[in-house]
Amino acid sequence: MSKSQNSAKKFSLALRFFHWSGLLMMVVVYASVWMRKLYEKGTSERELMMSLHFGVSVLLLGWLVFRLIAYYASAKPPIVPPQPPWQAKALKLMHGVLWGLMLVMPLSGWLMINAKGNPVKIYSLGFELPTLIGKNDVLGKMLGESHGLVGMVFLAIIVLHSLIGLWHHFFKKDNALRRML
Image (cartoon, rainbow, N blue to C red; front, side, top):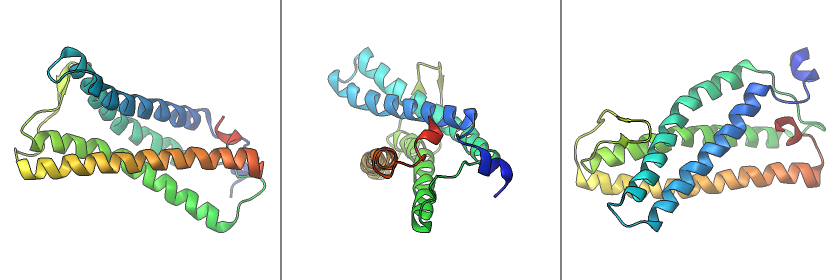
């Protein structure tokens, strides 16, 4: 480990920005997809909620690229006191799963909409995404069900990640959470 990794007490400002802006975007993605159910199908309000859901999901794809660049280019302050090796491995696995789902979820939603015979229109950003696959009702239904199920698993992992951070802070009393504040 380099001296800068050993001496840093917090993650870089860029990493902290990406972490918390990612959380904010995920809140918007989940809130907008749930809020759409408050409105009748075909209403402008429901379309707005889905456009917000699609738009922020697409932004997350681009954001993920820069997030990963910042992560691999930045020093990682150690958790003090050090955690057992199994916890360090579990943390790497959790990050990999979170980042993988941030890639898979928007792409699966895009494919699902295309398979249902529709383009992905992002009215809030004023454009339409290219169609990746043709209409296929069976595939569209499968993608829709898996997108919803994986979305709930993703939310559970986000909650678990948050609870583990709080557990480190309040029970282990180490600096794991403070490094990201």
